Image 1: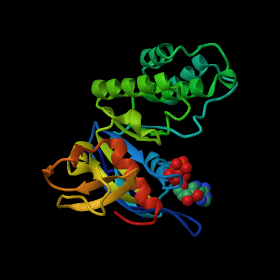
Image 2: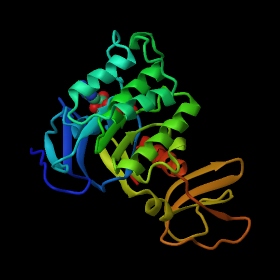
Image 3: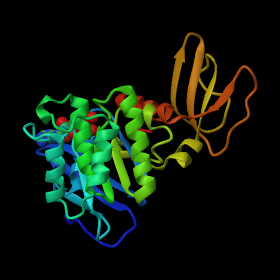
Image 4: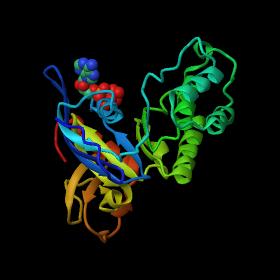
Length: 285
Ligand SMILES: Nc1ncnc2c1ncn2[C@@H]1O[C@H](COP(=O)(O)OP(=O)(O)OP(=O)(O)O)[C@@H](O)[C@H]1O
C-alpha cells in the first residue's frame, strides 16, 4: 500500500481499499476528481462514505491502493461528529484554529459564524447541534483548505441553514478554487451545488463522474403500466404504481415516444434514489 503525494490537479484515487477485520468497508475504489469541483458522495448507510473521507483526510491508512494529492494540498476534514471542544466558546475555537493552522483567515471564519448567527461567547457544549456544526465548518473554512472533506455537514441543520450552507460553500469554491467532497443523504439540496457525483455501494464506486454528463446519459420514461418502456436503451430501474410505470433508462440521446408516454430529464434525486434502490435489492447497475 502506498499513499502517493505527487503533483496532480485535484485528487487521483486508484484501487483504494480498507477492511475492518473481515468486514470490507472500501474496495477497489478508483476515480479522478478535478480541482475546484464539488463532489457529492452518496450511498446507503454503511456504504463506505466515512471510510473514504477518513482515508482521504490522511487519518486512516488504506490497506490497498493509493491516492494522489497536490504537493501543496491543505486538507480540512469535518467529521460526522463535528468535533469541537465543549468547554471552548466559538471564539476560542477560532483562536485554536489560528494556532493549529499554518494558513488562517480569521475574517473568513468569523464571517461564517456571524452569517449563521452563532453566539461567539457561549460554550460549544451549550450550543445546538446545528450551531456546533457551524463552528466546525467555520474552523475548516478559516484554514483556507484546498481540499475540503465534509462528512454529512447538512444532517443537523435546519432546511434554511442547509440551503445557505450549500450556497456559501459554492461561493467559497468560486472564490478560492477549493475542491469539496461532501457526503450526504440529503440529495435534494445538492441540485445546483454539486457538479460531480461519487456513488458508493457496499464499499465500491458504483457511479462517478461529471454530474451533467451522468444525468444527460439517462432519461426517465413515464407511461401506462408496462413491462418495458417503448424506447431503446438499458433499463436500470423501474417502478409500477397505480397503473403507471416509470423507467430509468441509460441512453445516449433523448428518445422520441408517442403519447401517453413521456420522456423527461433525470434529476440528481431520481438518479441517486434509483441507484440506491437497485443496490438495496442486491442487483448491480
Ligand atoms: N471502526 C470500525 N470497525 C469495524 N467496522 C467498521 C468500522 N467503521 C466502519 N465500519 C464498517 O465499514 C462499513 C463502512 O462504514 P462507513 O462508516 O464508512 O459507511 P458510511 O457510508 O459512512 O455509513 P453512514 O451513511 O451510515 O454514515 C460499514 O459496514 C461499517 O459497519
